[in-house]
Length: 287
Image (cartoon, rainbow, N blue to C red; front, side, top):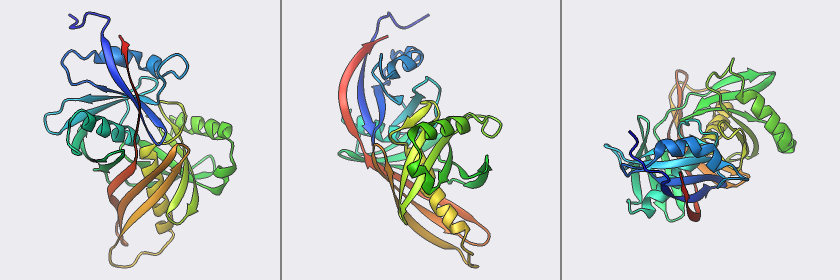
């Protein structure tokens, strides 16, 4: 039997991180209509007839952290980790009275967040293992940064039209023979040794987005991975900290991480995503 007597009024906040925008809600109360929100997510995210967003974020209760994060893609599908979404949700949590230094859960993983007014960083408890792949004659790096990504770093992307990036992104995202769960597709060009430009085709949004946090992480790590793969490692392990600037169409992001490499191993950890968060407006809708 339903606990709800419809219609139910739901308060939300529209937020974005470097142009990656979200409908954000506090879902901690027992009678929050989560299934109705899930059902209506495509309608809510529609940019002409709804609120308009890349996805829906819900702040939930957690038994072993400050809160849990639940993210739905704009098409209503379940999503894994969302870097910019998690930064927006952390700022939203502090606006509700939670501390500036936070721990939250996404599924079984726990992440850390620090909120500095409108600047938010997220610590990722992942150790990505990038792999080089060739797809239709083009070199890519496949990497999981909390969700699936492939990255191409090529100067030609800078002169490629959005229409053609969208076409290529859609094609690779739907290569279920290679990626049964689909993937996010990142097109990047190098600006300098520690700075790259990035455009991402996001699974679930099914379009190019203004920014992608986990895509920024994937791209930064792929950049170092490609460069280090061409160098001959020494006998002893070398550990280096990297800070990579990622210029997205919607604004700048920064990724830091530690790369350890020797003849026998190469791994990335201590990953942190930094960037701005903007609260656009408060609103409400009925379900």
